[in-house]
Length: 287
Image (spheres, rainbow, N blue to C red):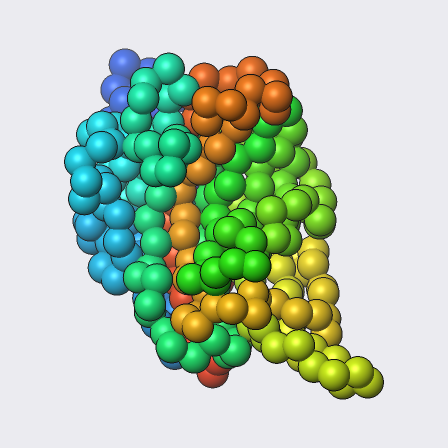
């Protein structure tokens, strides 16, 4: 039975029998969750769908040091992009939790030495859901996805590329500064991100130019098309590695100048994939 027909039948049933609506809603949720079509995907390095916990190929689940609380990272069966589960992240400003370098965060990441080839093309995709009541507009940003490296001085320590949630908008930050405004974020709905990144940390002698680029799609629309730029720090010796979750550095003691007005952040991730240089948009895109 097609999903659209099933939804109509379920809504009619709810109207006819309100006392049993809880059962019909559960069936509707199951129908939508199980309607995820299976698409052929190739050239994947990693895939995290929320169905296998801890996520394979990623570090940091529950933070091995034990400094996090049980609610910081969990498998959710109430919100999902595809299938019955996703990964839920929560941070609370008032609880001294998940302190790494003095900053409050709950994140998962690929191993920092996952690839020894620095300059390579990669595809990345994931879907992100912001829980409305716990994601009010805040003048202080948080990192919601980032690409770090093992760069050393004199290079900076900020991720070379990062996705920020900042004052009601999505931003792409480059080396710790917001550069590309992607527009307002939407609460209580899934937002799909796909990145095509050609990493290039070289310093060519003019007239030669860098071959690096950053292409970003938001819900299937190309929103960043940045080409012939340096993508990576000069001193890094490993591939830039992906992290996802919540990193709220303005909650760190001493960063009060950001003026954060929130105390709780809750979000969900699903359909996370990393593709090789041979992958395509469809190989990593949440669908």
